[in-house]
Amino acid sequence: MPIYEYRAADPKHACRHCADGFEVMQRISDARLETCPECGANVVRVISAPSLGSSKSSLDDRAKAAGFTKLKRLGKGEYEKQY
Ligand SMILES: [Zn+2]
Image (cartoon, rainbow, N blue to C red; front, side, top):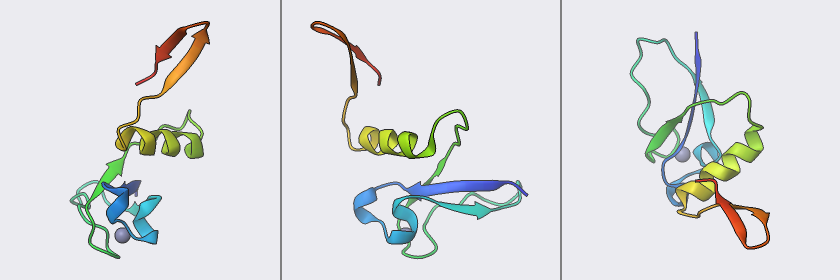
């Protein structure tokens, strides 16, 4: 059975269970979760990216969700917009 990861859609309205994401074992035929089973907050399914370190990607996801733009400094006065 595949394991899906969910995370609170809005970290400001999340409990300890869903704020950093949680894993649920579901059959493929099961409907995806829409709310946290603990607090009822809206959750989104996280698509796992095994090639990325999980802590780094979750930090990036949170920054992205909060509307931050991440810039990578390439050189003097030169930045690459990563998202
Ligand atoms: Zn929750």
